[in-house]
Length: 403
Image (cartoon, rainbow, N blue to C red):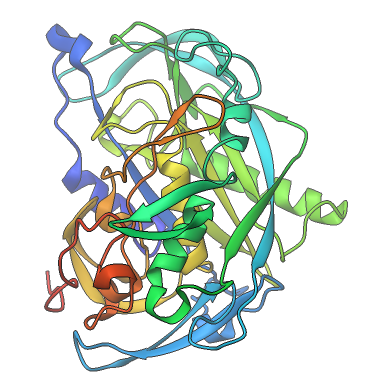
């Protein structure tokens, strides 16, 4: 992920898929992206990893990269895999369902990828059954999210190596440092609690919905300006903190359903679509993440159900404050230029590991993630000497990216 929202916009404007004209609207497809909101001090300056203060359980790592020969320091969630006497780390993860009501509806799209609109309302609710894009009994997004491998245990084999019956992101992290922690009780787990849904009414000029069927989509898809939503997220966090319902040792998730974010006007599809990000705010630092549970079928490459959750929770685990530096890398996944941060999902956005069949009978999709050694270089300390958890990457990120 890029270092802040403004840099993300530069990448997005270059990478977007060229949408079809109104004469072929039924084939409308959108590009999926994510971003990051790094920790900053009261003056808006970036905070270094070692100066990031939070009650979140973290460790500090120091590594010299074989890619450029330079030392790097960063912070990750959990117990130090370079240590010993391992025991599980569990982080409480409040899930906050957001019921989003928009007051503008799309009616079409022109050749400049700008939506035409009319007045009208639509509500997108993760806590209510959706029988258009989902099928009973697995038709409540919130329930499906709770029952997913993000939170529930499944058997995970990376290649021929069994890394554990556990949550997906714990399996990733164990595989990430397998040569140090394999066969031990090293675990980094998230424990969900569900808070009451919060209803948000979006002003007409800050959000819209593409109605079901307009472009062949099974259900409505909401698009809301990120500049509208993020202050709302921060305000909710402040209220929940003052009520004693969350604290900085926890990782709150704002669950959206078929709602994405635009970095410009919601009508301008050239500035869409952010399906999630992980952020850090306040002093001490509160981490959080808005995540879309997606079923509309709008996106290329295809994005389904918990693939964005896998991306964001994995990035929070390995770069919780959004400020872990790496040698520059790029031109892979969602990144068209160069980045220099430890965002483990970005290099493989749209690439999944084998799907997982949940105990509820639902088939879950989980994004593949890049290992620590891909960013910092050989030799790999990961499972099977791999560089990503489905072995898409056969080597590290290579020479330092320059442009």
